[in-house]
Image (cartoon, rainbow, N blue to C red):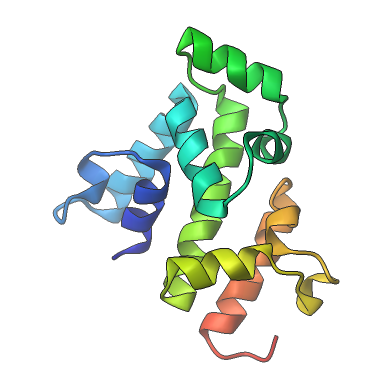
Length: 149
């Protein structure tokens, strides 16, 4: 499964991005618009489930409170663009890890386990900032290409 298809599967987003005829440009443009409009609470729950995190833990990672998540769910409203962007970032790293390790279970386990290359932090604990996400992504790139990490 291509990285963008895995990403959409983790987020639970159907659409043209999943189709074989979609181009990389189409997927990027579609993804930007989806994030700007706001991802659904269902996407939030799917990513939480993927990482095996509670809603409280997930809300902390995306930078909001559990009360806000509950309110949005009650009102059937999407996340705002900032929270959606953070959620998308989490899903993107999950998809990259799944691609590198060729297994969702192995990827999830790796994301939650402290890593020496990340100063003893679990990768998921660094995904609340762009800098941390970039560091985790670079580590996954090194693992994928066989560079000692």
